[in-house]
Length: 284
Image (cartoon, rainbow, N blue to C red):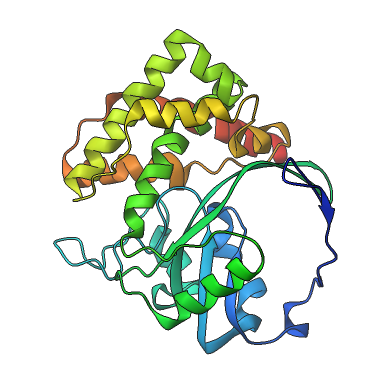
């Protein structure tokens, strides 16, 4: 695998197999799958699981474990958009879950070639907020590999900070075919992004989460990524199903749960959902 980065290009030769049974039970499973693949990943993950194995899912959006270990009126509640009928938690039990929020911008230039644009931090955390030995063990391994991997006592805050951007930029990029910089520089689209971010922060606040990042700072961070295509736009261009449930549908579901008015999110959700239906039909 070739990695192209302004921090220095390098080539890695990881052990790879199409048969996870060749590996057997491990301490940690690190998932790089799209969230919409979790329900069907059992054959890939099950041979790797021992009684103590943790599952760290590096995903954008609302995770399937969101209400696991969270005291309050929604403790243990399943979010249908990301765990439909319990299909995901049946494959990836919430007791195994360690949350992970990725602060990195990358693109797959071609098979086996990854272009790294910015960021080397992967924040992790237990759903119950504890600083567990398994989190420390995984973080130490990531740091030894040259990455930043803080163990956060409130990872849900990071989830919403990252989601502020993903909830808007990802579906809008698919609808407009625009890059991050293009969406930020287009005045009308930028105003739509701001409205979507405000509505998302309202939902978060009703769930007791208050990200300490301003909308303008979040927009400035998006602009710094330049002519970067979001992962959703990359999937669209490859004819793949769009990862919208965790990024957008789950936020609309949580808005219904908390009574938050989210008119802009609902409109974009409807349009992006129709686009996803068309992409799925074309793929089959």
